[in-house]
Image 1 (tube, rainbow, N blue to C red):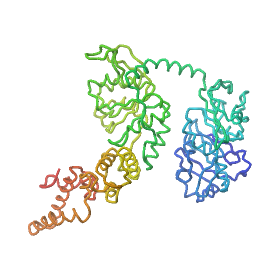
Image 2: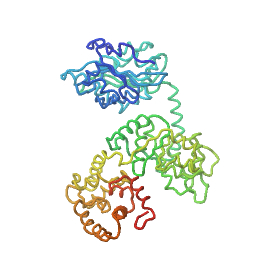
Image 3: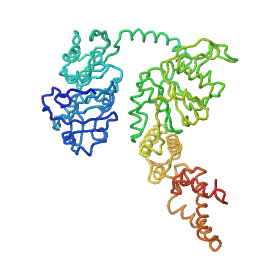
Image 4: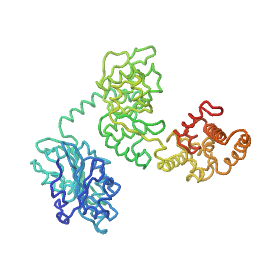
Length: 599
């Protein structure tokens, strides 16, 4: 197992203000959970070490974007994090076993006095936002402070020098470049304050193309970023050839008006619940890879929104994003829609033929919604496309190569469909490389206020209104409802209310009637029911049945009324009765076949 050297773990790292051995060290696993720490670390964080074990580092310390760097195995030094005890200077190095990142060591060097916090953290402020324009997984990246000391470097860059990030971190840039005769131009860029873009460099005997940008704050240069654009001169020729091959298809896309770009990004995914935050973090990591992705979730959970966000966060973001619902296209048209056709392929075929959705998405992303509804004969053709990266348009004998990332979505149980022979097992494994399980709204209720706020802002702009929010009665209904239609249903309810709202607040009477009937006002509808139906039932039963039979029949009556009021929705009926859905089904089974009990 490899890690940093002892000095780096001890926190000295060439830093004169840190006493050797005075740093506190936390061992972090791949999920950024604390697996071990010493007394010094606990003291700097203001908590006993045993109370911190198992907690995620982000729940204990405000890491800003440093957490994303840690997940990517990026080494950094002399960065400032925020704890409840104050601002702490820290270093981080990944722990690697068999060329695989298995965790990392976070060294807490010292607490900063309040008067030094802002000035010391000025580089960290920019550094923590660098993932907005840097791809740490693939690009070779190095960042130095104003003195030329390396404060961040990733594995891609270190490989150019046949070394590791740990060996470069904390060193002056001239000491870090030990295997090349050409000195770094980063000090020169910091002196002039002018970036150098796409300049050829010779690093460790390799010709690379790189860009160097000064980091500027309030008119002062406080550091510098170096980014490798091409680590192999052959990459430029390869890309040029690909662009040339793609040009005819691009012209045909432009002519047909079929070139589509993403409409949403990761910031369009509204929510701060634990599940959504974890999904967004995973999305950012997975999007930069090339694997196919399967989105799973109930109808209305926002699967297409996630597909757009994946595309926008990927290296294909400037290429087309093409979407198609497999269930919305008639089966006899599906092949021509997906793979296109040539002139004369069938009666009525367009002159010159037409590109299919896959070729329209060439070099980009295709989103296939409701993939579980794709017929079996098309699944076989899909499998060949995914395996061979080529397709044959309808009516043609010539195959065409395509470079497309597939993001598929379904609300079906594909595993069950595979067992029943309705979905090909080999295609299932081709699509199910990376899976995102998008939670239903009832499992992320804490996001409902944020979603409603987003919808109110949108509809205020669209309708020219000034709605401020919901009153208490409306909130009570919204918060108690289970939202089987998920975010789509919530959006429709708010839009419906906007059409009838008067004044600054959405009230109970502005919500759809079927929603209000599920949650009657206490003491009004409930009292009316009790005074009529219940009293009449009891009087008719007394003297005719024993008490156990009366209770049994009254339970059947309650179940019948709840299901009728819920228009057959068992989830809503169970909610009205104050029991679980499983409990309702048990009672239905108990009363099955008896008069007056619904089935």
